[in-house]
Image 1 (spheres, rainbow, N blue to C red):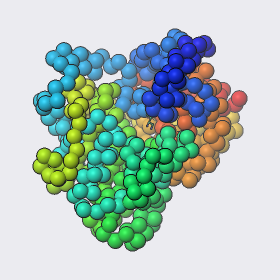
Image 2 (image 1 turned 180 degrees about the vertical axis):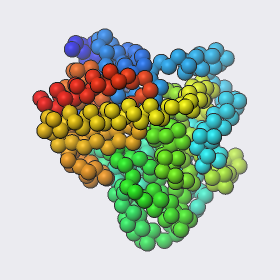
Image 3 (image 1 turned 60 degrees about the vertical axis):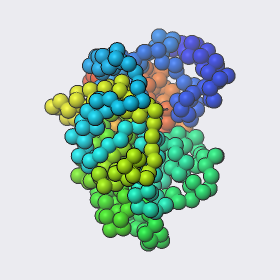
Amino acid sequence: MKTSRSEAIFARAQEIIPGGVNSPVRACRSVGTGPLFIAAGSAATVTDVDGNQYIDMIGSWGPLILGHNHPEIIEAITTTMAHGTSFGAPTEIEVTFAETLRAAVPSMEMVRAVSSGTEATMSALRLARGATGRAKIIKADGGYHGHADCLLVAAGSGAATLGIPGSAGVPAGAAQDTLVVPYNDLAAVERCFADHPAQIAAIIIEPVAGNMGLVVPAQGYLQGLRDLCTKHGTILIFDEVMTGFRVAFGGAQALYGIKPDLTTIGKIIGGGLPAAAFGGRADIMRNLAPLGSVYQAGTLSGNPVAMAAGVRAMQILARPGTYERLEVAGQRLADGLLSAARDAGVPACVNRVGSMLTLFLCDGPVTDYASAKLADTTRFASFFRAMRAAGVFLPPSQFEAMFVSLAHTDQQLDHIIAAARTALRS
Ligand code: HOZ
């Protein structure tokens, strides 16, 4: 497979962009190779600048649940942008966006749009702290909620991949109020409340963890968090940036029947353009400026083109049968990958919720970050490279999730399974 054009562009990129990429995981360092530069995407495939086509299991890290270049999304974007691309003044589509979101996720009684998941989580935490007058927050070890200072503590995703569980440049003061607990460990959360009475503003949690690889919440875990937050007057924030409209139309909170106080959401709700949002209980949301004293703002917040793409994506996903199809496709891929690993004699387990999943190269079970780290990352790196050579574009890290879209065909999923069978044998 010729990749000389990607390599040449990467050489140029490294001269001008740190590491040659605008987001670290894309550099593919942990899998011992360089990035491919993508020229185009169509349905479930991407084509690189050398003309190689791949089945895409990244889907822009989740947003592209409808596949690339979906005609209805493109139509919504082009129709909207014909009237202008940004005004820095309100537009009606922002209201429609908030109404559409609330109809799907009723706990989001009031909504504010932002441009990225990082902004959503950062803003939700400031709001929680402002509303409670408390400073401390709880997050999970290996949980990733974007790159705000107070959240880059024991963080997953790229921070995990690169082996820097914190980050240089985060002042001790910004991190000192972040308490870290193992995922799925309610007793550890109880200890935090006992050690810091009436000081904890919020728990922020991925209701299905997706950035230490995928980790499923244990039976009763989310309800336990809900009960503890209610008991202690602490705000429960579900970070549904990945799981919103992914694991169910109403997100993980609909799937598991738990109502958080605040939700952060992104990716799918932008229809492939940069949009995210946070929202929740109206009494909490009314603390935001201009109504209240918690400041939060953004020039491109509620950008009409992104809002239009997001509204259309949510409308398409509301059609009957969507999540049943995603479940069947996710199950097909998970079963196939697991049997490929078993046949190859490679220790493996698959964690999956709907159309997001991780193949961990270890016996498992993987229930938290400590058990995720038992996976064989060296073997994962060679697996990744062999899969890419076989035309499959996987997330370039053991500690990420792959995403099945509505555009993936059974033949494509079977191609991935067959490729894995060969890759895991070598
Ligand atoms: N934070 C993303 C992985 N969970 C990576 C985003 C990107 O590189 O585009």
